[in-house]
Amino acid sequence: MVSPRIAIFPGSFDPLTNGHVDLIRRSTHLFDRVVVAVLVNPEKRSLFSVDERLTQIREVCQLLPESAQIEVDAFEGLLMHYALKREACAVVRGLRSGVDFEYERPMATMNAHLAPTVETVCLLADARYAHVSSRLIKEVASLGGSIDGLVPTSICERLLARVRAETATRS
Image 1 (cartoon, helix red, strand yellow):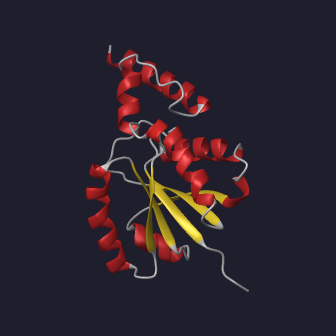
Image 2 (cartoon, one colour; image 1 turned 135 degrees about the horizontal axis):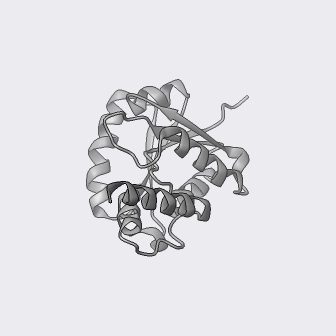
């Protein structure tokens, strides 16, 4: 019996964007199982809690035709420790530009040092989402700009409500 090829797609996903969803879907064509792994980082101030992000990602992924191949989980600590624990053969990373490549290359090299059996697989962002990042989405939303088509509809509604609530709190 051949072991399933498991890939980890790690990130903060605060919020999940349509670029993330595209990479998740494309990863399912390369691997038997894709674990969307939310990094728990208590040092980082997130807009959504880890539990909220897990719920949002699960809701979006359940609507995908590839949903049976997708699992959503959270992890703390080193990604490679988590990947080995999950018996993953790969970590999937998205590249939007050369800047992302410059960031990801030393990470991939260190990860290979920590876990030589786990490959880093980089997928180029779809041109429709190459300009999209969670940080930029939050910034545009907080300043009243349109994020339509850049995040899943259910997340867009929650994000706008959260941004309005935070704005009201600061006023």
